[in-house]
Image (tube, rainbow, N blue to C red; front, side, top):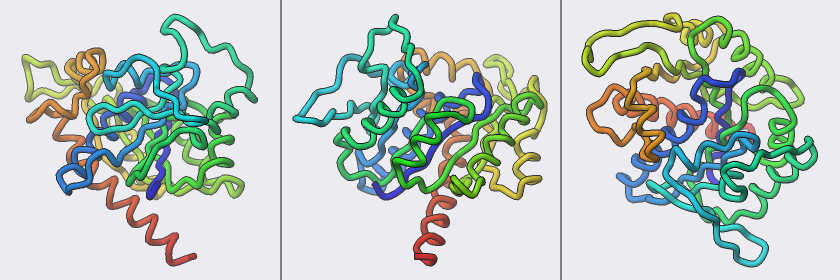
Length: 265
């Protein structure tokens, strides 16, 4: 795995998993255009609420080869999720050690193959899964997703600071402002800043971190997620345009982090 990047948020409900799915698909599109298809992985470590399978249009059970699970694939992205291993209506009522063991198995007992990028969708907050992952996988960076409202920004700030701790010390690839504004389909030129304006952009500047971009709140994002066809595939839409611009900045930042690590090594 050439580059392993975590996607997380300090607060739930900010669209983190929706962002992770669309980012993975955007990277897959970019690599396919360069003649490197099928080299993006998406590990859904949101064990209690695995929503990635629905959003990316996958269901069923993964194949097993010996001691290894074979990730399922859609839109050029290899996917592993707790959602493939339990029934839709079955809650995961586990304590921390069981969660940590599952995360380790997703890393060590899934046959990912050769990847250029592995994105890991973490649950919100700062808990057992985050610590277990840091101890299990050599992470290259983390993306923090937040809405621009103050209550979400406070938790996003804590998320950034957690990964900066000496005991964790994972580079911040950048911050993303999700649901940056609402644009109704019948008024495509209008923007309504219902959660505030530029909150994440200002937070990134204040913490001296990279701002990756704004993602608008539009009805088609919800519809495409429910239908299992990520919004990034809807050509000439505000969402697709936003991800096209964002993925270029993301790739550049990750490459810069890898280059700095290589120099230190």
